[in-house]
Amino acid sequence: MSNQSDDNINTGTLVITESEGRDCLRVRKTKLLVISGSLQGREFIVNRDVFTVGSGTHTDLRLEDSTVSKRHCEILVDENGYLIKDLNSTNGTFVQGVRVDSAHLAPGSEIRLGKVRIVFCPLQDSSDIPLSRNESFGKMLGKSVPMRRIFYIAETYAPSDATIMITGETGTGKEILAEEIHNHSNRRDKPFIVIDCAAISKELIESELFGHIKGSFTGANADRQGAFELADGGTVFLDEIGDLSPDLQPKLLRVLEKREIRRVGCNRVRKINVRIISATNRNLAQEVNENRFREDLFYRLSVVHLELPALRHRRDDVPLLVTRFLTDMHGENAVDQIADFERTMKILKRHDWPGNVRELRNLIELAFYSERRPVDLSTFLSIGHLKAGVSNEPPDINFDTDRPFKDAKNELIEDFEKAYLRDLLERNKQNISRSAREAGIERAYLQRLVRKYGLRE
Image (cartoon, rainbow, N blue to C red):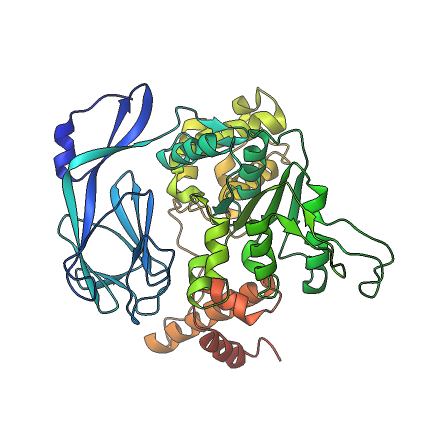
């Protein structure tokens, strides 16, 4: 990467540079000036990759105000500057008077959180955010800035025993990253035990984690070790940690604090020597705000926080991933079997990839079942409700132009809502609360829609 002048720093934009042999993002330092509320007049330097603001005790900037959520918003750095993201707060995050889910901050931007107003103030000094020089971390691939930042943090903390939380959408590779962190640690020769907190029933999860003694409950016919004992000296990976029941959260917190467990039905305390990595595709900040997930446990689990970007946010990595998947599944000459590789990559990079890297891998696997050669990968985007977004053909929508516009429009909306809700409920096994969280709508509103369309008794 090329060196660039520090003159660019004055614009508030980021530049890629090299510092002491390591690639990095160079960014202007910045501060937050509180202009209303109990901290009026105080200044706070944004000195972390992800700087959290809220009323909770573990935030980087704590605002003791009843209109501010525990984890209200966060400010982070990407290749385009400083980005503020609302964390599903109750009263919302406003930038220059406009409510936002996320927005890049310009110098002098006014931020409003509840009743508190803050001004974003870049400074003249700059700081460097290191990036890995590698385009892979074990099985994880990526040359984009977000992935190389992930790789740098993983390379830095893998050799330690730091507790790590990995977040990101389904299909981004959270379990693969967790296993690679284990493989790059001093515990690599010890067990890597996976517990899926969403797949194990509430009645059995405690036994799966901590073990049990004979007779402790119906069906406990013998003593049994749990994941923390089985992983002695190694790593326990708690997948879908957001699904852990409230009853078990304090028990897991005790494990993190004291490094000891008790089997179900037993009073004897056993010391453990494990590293804990967790993952979730849920918005745990929202879960904390709504008191469904303990704030103290959240911070114990996320000593190091890695958020894997969605594939649509790192489209330049698509050719690299396609080449790796083709080689792994079909040999080194598989790339030559793709029709017009460069054109195909341009089409694939325009796709939104709701299923992320997993969807891309499945697409390649599906395409090669066809005996037709060369393989046109782009044609398989239309299979399985995927869409490339580059066709000149009109979408397949059925309506009658002889009817009033309003009636035709309402019917289309109803057809969409019914199809969307059926799929949503099916994916979440008819669980209304989980479906509402995934769809980003109020539970009561979802219930009204379900009743309206008779989708559940």
